[in-house]
Amino acid sequence: MLRLDAVSHRYPGSDVDALEELSLQVPGGTAMGLFAPSGSGKTTLMRIASLSLRPTGGAVTVAGHPVSGVRYAVPRSIRRTMGTVGQSPRAATSPRLSLRRIIAEPLSFADGRRTPHASAYTERIAELADLVQLSPDLLDRLPHQVSDGQLQRACLARALALDPKVLLCDEPTAMLDASTTAVIMRVIAGRAERGAAVLVASHDHAVLGASCHVLRPLGGTE
Ligand SMILES: Nc1ncnc2c1ncn2[C@@H]1O[C@H](COP(=O)(O)OP(=O)(O)OP(=O)(O)O)[C@@H](O)[C@H]1O
Image 1 (cartoon, rainbow, N blue to C red):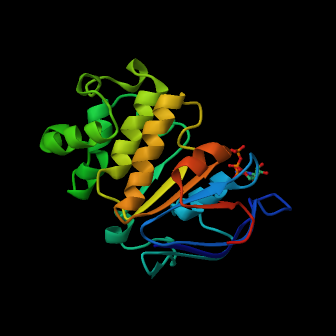
Image 2: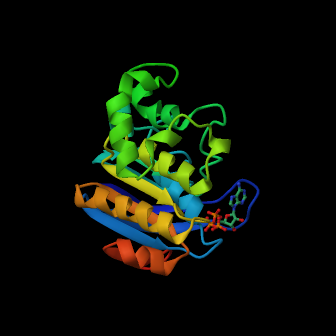
Image 3: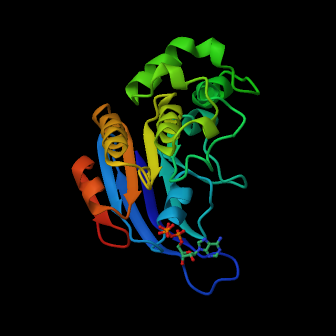
């Protein structure tokens, strides 16, 4: 479960809040769609929810653990239950890693390896590629050798590699065609059916409405 209580954020040097006292709760088994027009603070919120940005006010709780302390962290065991997908797969991947190694990243790091090690996870990578409908012949290509949609499928496979209990997606289908959008949103919604707390932010109401049980506007009431 993911919970945000009165979370606010003001960037240094700014005199307005990018995000103002937002509270929401995403229970396990729920896909919540957050309808968020451009500039409304969607990315700020998703960075806070994924613990990559410390809010200037309010509190975040992941799976019952309040996030706190100097490092603003949760125990590694909890951190590993969180998966994230961003809007730009190119910004989220190393250009030097094959898709196979990109998917192997969380599996490798969870096992204490310092670099992604695909050959140790052949079966799991094949299973994840199948889930996101990424054909096996693409797995040995580098990011510049595949389309944005194919790379985003690899990013989603990577986010699902450790079976996350919380899945956070910031505009996961921005710039993708309709068929890739449908696959990606179906897989994301399927994760909620398997018990995860899923939060998807998008400016596209139709995309959210087709896949999320709960829809709410950013800044609106729950
Ligand atoms: N690093 C930053 N420093 C100062 N202001 C920022 C910074 N990042 C974002 N902002 C401001 O915070 C507000 C919210 O930005 P955010 O990126 O969260 O919005 P968004 O809803 O994701 O928009 P978009 O869909 O256009 O990416 C905007 O007014 C933006 O200009």
